[in-house]
Image 1 (cartoon, rainbow, N blue to C red):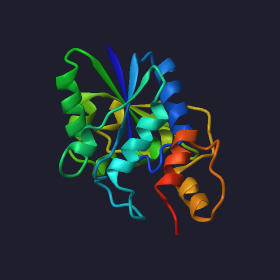
Image 2 (cartoon, rainbow, N blue to C red; image 1 turned 135 degrees about the vertical axis):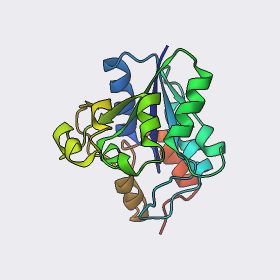
Image 3 (cartoon, rainbow, N blue to C red; image 1 turned 120 degrees about the vertical axis):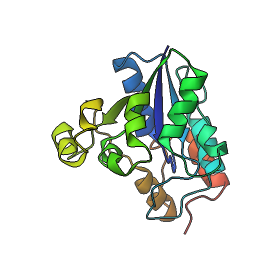
Image 4 (cartoon, rainbow, N blue to C red; image 1 turned 90 degrees about the horizontal axis):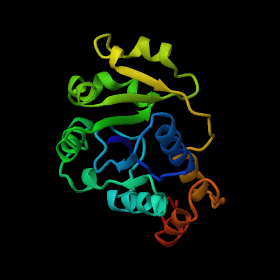
Length: 197
């Protein structure tokens, strides 16, 4: 069993996240991809993060009916900061003998030196950094501690110009976000009045 793990804040999840999950699944030969929203993001955000239950529900709605994607709620229900190392340990316990492939943005991987137990993270999984504009393997080499860099591989996916920040700003400005995120997520945002000024 080869299990992908796509972690993030997902505030909100959007179509670029879903594309990266599916592209990585096919190109890396994964059996399934677990989409894992942070419960309590351990790194300070520049904005007030939407409650974890709302972000989890949006992930559940986004992956519904997608055979190879599954929402994984463990970080939302675990107390304290959402550390990747803890999540990977729990997944290894759940899937003994399975290969865990942790997928996240290259911008996040560039900060791996600040993560909780980064040496454990690279030992518990195959760490795949999804390239971002201006953030490829050479850029990572300059920013990642040299003892961790050999454990990182880069997955290059087509660039899709969608971000959670863009969606939050558009909602705040009263602009449409359909086609940027699944319809069920758009409805959830509207019904729960998320991201309003």
